[in-house]
Length: 153
Ligand SMILES: [Zn+2]
Image 1: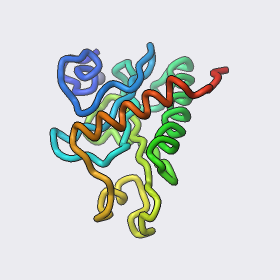
Image 2: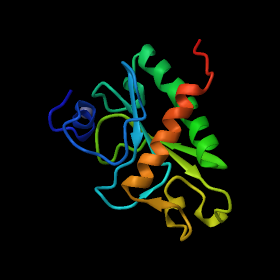
Image 3: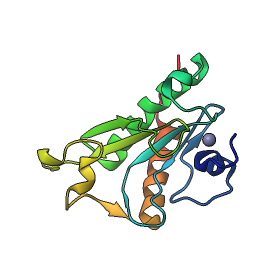
């Protein structure tokens, strides 16, 4: 835990972010992206490593196992509950040195010039929403994860 890290503070519950917690275990934390109170691209989910470590290569085998499994499950949940036709996954780390993966849905009818994890944001018909809608998305994804019969190995 690093005291001046946005993600560590979010896990501790010491700052409010958009939506609700979708999932948490010993290794990973899942929630919706927060854009500082502004409208968010609906279904843009963040998977964080619980431990304060910067990149994919820093994960222990247990962390990597948990991260890979939740990546698969969240991708399926967003696709099924939000009607996404494709899921982009991206680790950037430009702003916060604490490992987090962006899970970004591409919705049906998105024109090809807007295909990509950043590009989908620029489509004029992209679905953006404020907290109330973000909470709804979180609840749908959360419920799917709870009911999906994914069996971990
Ligand atoms: Zn951190």
